[in-house]
Length: 188
Length: 122
Image (cartoon, rainbow over all chains, first blue to last red; front, top):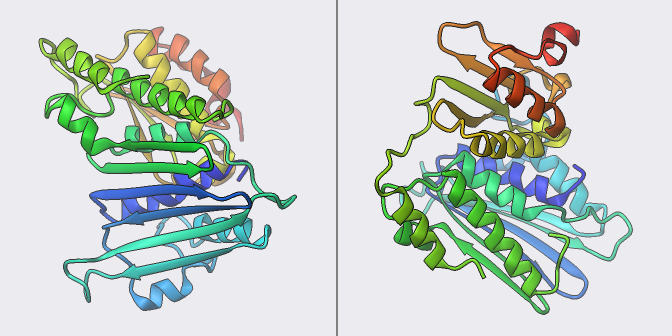
């Protein structure tokens, strides 16, 4: 992947596919690390599936027996000296508190660090693709505090205005960009 | 700052309009957004369709949706256009630029852009 934001989009789509109603995406930076965490209340994975999930030949897709989303994220984290961890509780054993938390830590000053790229674009794309799911996005770094919660947006918009309405998608993108600019980041 | 007040304004604006939900338009544009599509550059293609359809005032008849892996990963980004009563058109190796052309000629003009379809790329 050319941008970490594309990995985030890709892995968050696993949460959508797992039937999640709530998906949390957080990016937390320190001076030398960047941690991406994607958490959901989807169906979760069985311990057997979880054990194999970083294997490129493990997938839920039916079109071909290859699944590269998680392996790519793992590779990108490890090539900076970082790591990937996944915790999951399957609905068969955890009927109430099921879900998955995928977390990848990167050493962002490493020469092989994948640039973060257009995270605003990824958040907008996720919401456009699944307007009925609630997304909670946060990005914190020294001097930066960005957040977007679709639950808050729904409270204002009411039930009749869907989140994938073009005007709303434009608002989301502009809102995020302004928060990034306020934190001194112009590239996002 | 884009405030929640502006969201409320959007709500107010939409009050007297019927909001089309997914799948109600005559034309459906489906963008492949699995790992293969995303890695090949599907995100800007999707954005171009979403923005283009809104800006050209096509929202009433065109809906843009995402799907998983279509199974022809080597041709990603893949975009399928479904129109009732017509054969499906499959565009391959798409870019945001090509998307703009498809919006203009196909979605607005009614004639598919043959050179970007899978038939011309095999």
